[in-house]
Amino acid sequence: MTKRALLLFSSTDGQTQRICERLCRMLAEAGAAVTLAAIDDAEDVAPTDFDLAVIGARIRYGRTDARVIDFARRHAATLEAMPSAYFSVNIVARKAGKDRPETNPYVRAFLRRARWRPRRVEVFAGRLDYPRYGVLDRLLIRLIMCMTGGPTRPDTVVEYTDWQRVEAFGRALCADLAACPARAASVGLQMQPSLALERAGDRVPLELRAHGNVAQRQ
Image (cartoon, rainbow, N blue to C red; front, side, top):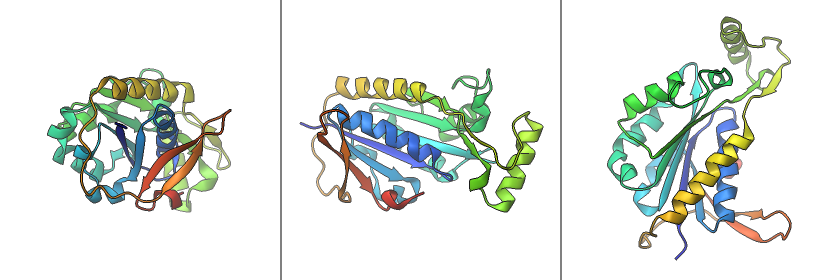
C-alpha cells in the first residue's frame, strides 16, 4: 500500500513553499503519494488521512502565521500519534547560535503556543530579496536588518537557506515514513490533479498532488 504524506505550509515570499517542494520531491522519489497544501486550504485537510504530516511556517515580523498555530492546536493529538514534523523558516536562523531548533526563538515560541510536540523539529534560514518586496516591506525589513547587523542595500538578494540541511531533513522524513505502518485508505479524500515531477536521470514521472491552488502561488 502506498503511504501518504502531507506537507502543509505558510509562505509569504515563496521560500517556505520552495523548501516544501524540495521535500515533496524527495518523498515522492521514495514512493510516497504526497499532498502539498497551503495554510489557506487547511480547513479541507485532515492529518488522519495521512501517514506522515509535515508543517512548515514562515516568520513575518517576528510572528508565526496564527493559522498554523491554530491548525497545530486543533490537531495536536492526531499529529502526536503519528510521524510528524515541524520546521520554521526565518532570517534570524542565518546567525550562529540561532540556527538550531533548540536555540531559535521563533521555534521555541511556536512549540510553547501550539501545544504540539512533533517528532522532528528543524529551522532553516530564509531568503532576503529586497527587489521582490513592496515599498513598506522593504523599508521595514531593511530597518530590522540594520538593527540585527544584516545587509541593507535595497538591491540585495541573499539565499541563506542551507539546501544540504534541507535534504538531510528530507532523508530523515523518508526514513520516518518508511518505518511506520500504512494507514487504511480514507474514503472521500479530495485532491487536485497531480503535478508532474521527473526523477533525474531516468525521467520516471512521479506523483505530487497539490491541494487547492498551490500550483499558482508565487
